Image (cartoon, rainbow, N blue to C red; front, side):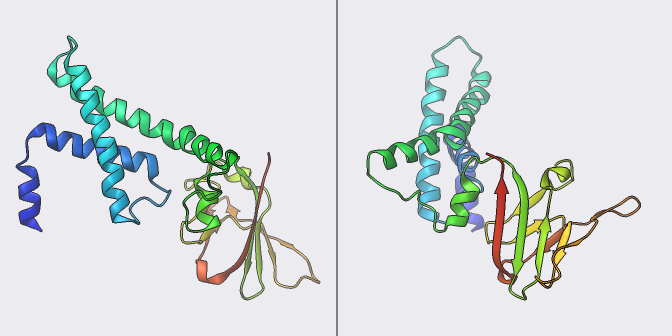
Length: 206
């Protein structure tokens, strides 16, 4: 392993640059969207962004820019394209393919992953039903937008974290109001493992 790293570091700077920027572009475009789960996809998608980095470097090298200004600008080009792909182009391509009848599948292994990957409006209400029958709810999720970890967390593995404002242990008794914020002790966020959850209801304002 150490020998492989040494061999890699002995490559010419231009080669190391396009490889590094290619991987950065891949991570920017796909982090949180299954990035790193498939080694083959990681290599080939990194190679796509590496080719873009190489093309940008060659194009900028023909200008009057200082040679050391070429590299950061090429990196910015790659990261800009990666973010455009992540924010708009990937979803546009999926919708175009679906519209013309080529595929209805967006490439994710579960609908949960598909939901996490889409640019959706913020969560307004979150209800988690546990396998034990207990239900936890954050009634006004936006109330916690300024919290250190954000208003809620939805893990790729199906885990959920929320600020519990209501609890229901018996449907006949209904919801019992809770207060997750204490003036002295701060905010209490509840983390729930995926294997404890039977159902999640997520409400968003269109």
